[in-house]
Length: 343
Image 1 (tube, helix red, strand yellow):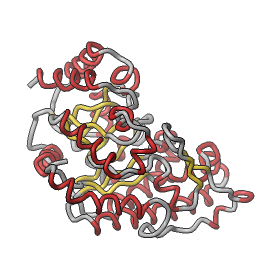
Image 2: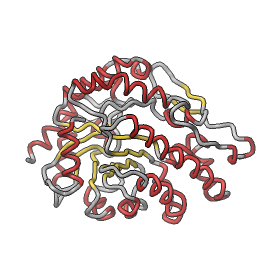
Image 3: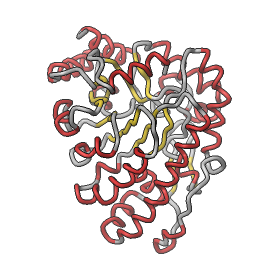
Image 4: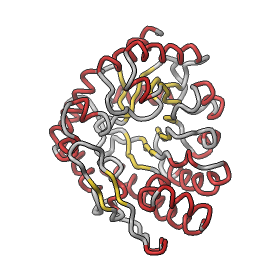
C-alpha cells in the first residue's frame, strides 16, 4: 500500500469522499497460483514473495491491496507460536494440527512470546529484510495483522470441540480466549513497535459468525473489544466472511471502523446492520463469481451491487472475503473496469 492509498483509506473512514475505491485482501491462497509458483516457494523464498506481490501491484495499480506485502504462513501463523504442529504441502495451503490436550486440560495453555515463538519471528524478519525493496516500490507496511481469538482457538482446540466447550464448559473456553487475546495484543504491539509506518490493525476471525447473539456477547465481544480498544491507530479493520447478522450491530461499539464481510447479506443489508460509520469492504461472491465466473459474470455482479447502493460513502468495492484461489487477471480487470465506469 502506498502512502497515498493509506491517505485514501483515512478519507474513506472519515467520510470525506464519496468516490468508490477498489480493495482486495490478498495473501497465499491467491498470489502463488496467480504468479505461477508453488505455495511452498512463496513461503520460503523472500525474493519470490516480494516479486509476486510486486507483480500484483504493477498489474492492478487501481486497487488498494489489503494489506499488501503481507508476511504470513496461512492459518499456521499464530497457532505455531502455541506449539501446534504445522503441515506444509508443496503446493497446497498449510494446516495446523490441534494441540493434544489430555482430557481437555486447557489450563495448561500458556501465552507465547511473539518475538521468539513459532513462525512469528520469521514473519517479522522477512518484513525487515525486504523493507528497503518495498520502500523503493513506493509502498509501506500499513497494518499489524493477526488471526482473531476465536479463529486461533478453533485451530488449537478444533472448531467443533471449541464450540462445544463454549456451551458445555464455558469457564474453560473463557480461559483459552483470555490467553489468546492477551497474546494477540502482544503480537500486534510487537509489529507496531518494529514498523512505524503501521497505523492500523487487521484482525481476521470467521468463527464469530458461528455464534448466536448471547454467545457472541459473552465470548467474542469482550475479546474483540479488548483488542480493538488497545491501540490508538486510525484503521481498525475486521474480516469475517461467515454470517455477520449477529455481530455487525456491535462493530462500532467494539471499536471497528472497517469491515470485510461475506455474501450472506447484500451491501445495503449490511449497511443497515452495521450502521453508517463503518467502512464496508465487499461483497461480490469470491468463489462462484470472481474465481469461477466469466468476465461478464463479474461485470454483472458488480453492476447489481452498484445499483443497490444508495450512497457510495464509506464503501470499498471488493469481494466477500479474501481473494480466493483461481481468480484470473481478466476477471479482476473486468471488476475494475466495471467500477470505473460508474465514476
